[in-house]
Length: 381
Ligand code: NDP
Ligand code: MG
Image (cartoon, rainbow, N blue to C red; front, top):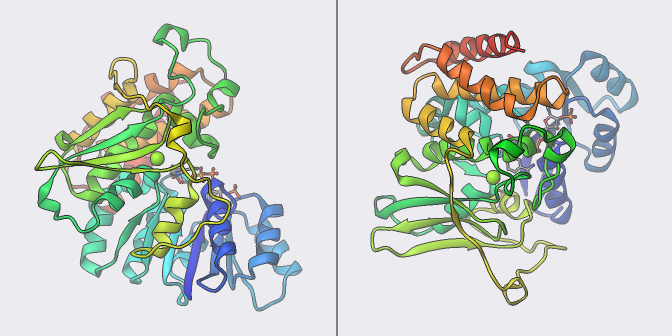
């Protein structure tokens, strides 16, 4: 029986993680969880899974849940609550599925408490990858990927020597606007941006997919998870999302991981690694029916956010922190209807130009730069 803490239980990855836990009650137990503001769903999750420890964002919600549920369930709130859930003493695996760099501190504290980390929360690795990976090494803790591309690469690497990797090939579906030209992007609406062709996901990552920033964040995520320079990480447009990513080895052999798009597969693999388990109601891949798979070179001029991410990753220091914070602030503004779609990339570009890079930042510098960048971006519209 594996004891799991789940951050972001009410989200897209969170609810799919609960489905994996629900399918294998003899193997997994949800001992602690966090939610944001969706208290109705939080109530249902508590009633079904009976976790011992629950964090929510607001104090008011914490107090009303305390009044409703038996006193053996502990309720906490705020950022500190996320950390407490992450380091809960009965927890063995932390599955981090919150959105944004708010996931950084809980991840670091869980690493120090020697919890295995299953990471969906890519913003944490983008904003402070050097700190997270160093802490994991120092504490001898595994960081297991949940993001489908990184899980695919991780699966392709089983039994291989790291030194024989030539290149990672991360596939990209292209997002909601893959068939539009740049000048056609000026007038797109929020509703259109939220309509992803292949995956149903939370709203922030769906917008990140439409701007291609999601792929940019994934390139930086791959750099840290697999310890490879950016020159060895490529992105390939693959509209069907059947090949979830590939690894090319020194003998030119290429390994790929395939499957029908279903995030429960990488979530479950992170929880069962190095083993596999059945996945009820999953869709077996029918390649004869699919018939053809398509691949195209990525156009960095069309998808400027991908270029920003490669540049920020290569510059290192605090540039990835700025990239991530500016993106979070810009996407939040777009989701509120305050800016147009193409303004997202303009704001990120301005923030990257404005910032003076700080090499080898510690956690307090990262925190400051993150806050300053958000503030700066919010003055631009
Ligand atoms: P969602 O927006 O669906 O869920 C986010 C979760 O985090 C919710 O539980 C939400 O709570 C909670 N949350 C949001 N803000 C805060 C906050 N400030 N403090 C505490 N909790 C908060 O996101 P996704 O599930 O789509 O994505 C989660 C992570 O996984 C992201 O980093 C994303 O990039 C990554 N990912 C997602 C994939 C997907 O298919 N969705 C695929 C690969 C990676 P509430 O709703 O209760 O307010
Ligand atoms: Mg992904």
